[in-house]
Length: 177
Image (cartoon, rainbow, N blue to C red; front, side):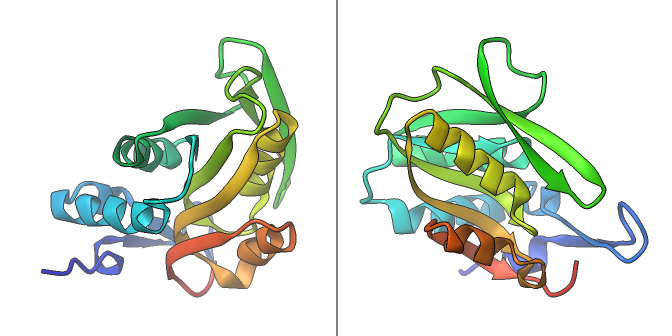
């Protein structure tokens, strides 16, 4: 039986502000068969790739990334919001629609030359994923690629990463914001 993952994603209109169609993947995570199918579909293309760690972006990237790391037999690196990690960090600021934000990674999260796959639930403008990539590169890692459940192609995030030589894979697309 094939699980229709797109059907398991709840859309919430006008959240967090008017005109935004929020794609809520927690309903997908809450469905046992859907979650199992999600992790299988995300990991399959990387099953034989040499990956040393999954870099999961807070917070939904932690859920997917941990399960993917287990399935692929590799490590996990948390990419967190500013001020959440307890050790020495690399920090990377990135642009939001109105202002900036910062993500951080422990400076000792990976050894030089380690092959890293970036994981998050959704790619929109690509700012967060690009910031995560910059952290990994600053630490000496090599980026295998970036994968997401959802791509919002109108916002250009996939193109942004691809222009930087990062292979991007998404399971589905939604139109709009």
